Length: 114
Image (tube, rainbow, N blue to C red; front, side):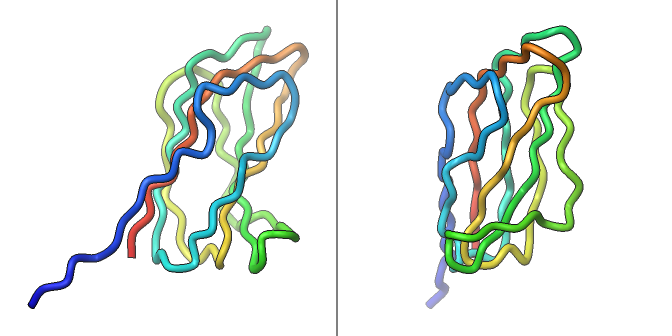
């Protein structure tokens, strides 16, 4: 009998708007061996606004550290993605802005698989 590998897509932020740095809701992903992150920027306003998205990991979901991956720099609306491995039991993301008076509206999803 062939067993199918488990997979799951988690929507962490859905059409949320931010005007200052923020952290997304963490996701418990200890069962997964890989993750694809998708950030769909619906709107990015503000003169020269740039969003920096840094993946973070945690062993218990309380104390977080940045991953070796460079922060994703997003300077225009659209779909942006990347892959992650060796992320521990919990996966999250810290997002910050460069420039003044920014505003972003976005959707963030994780596609996880064994």
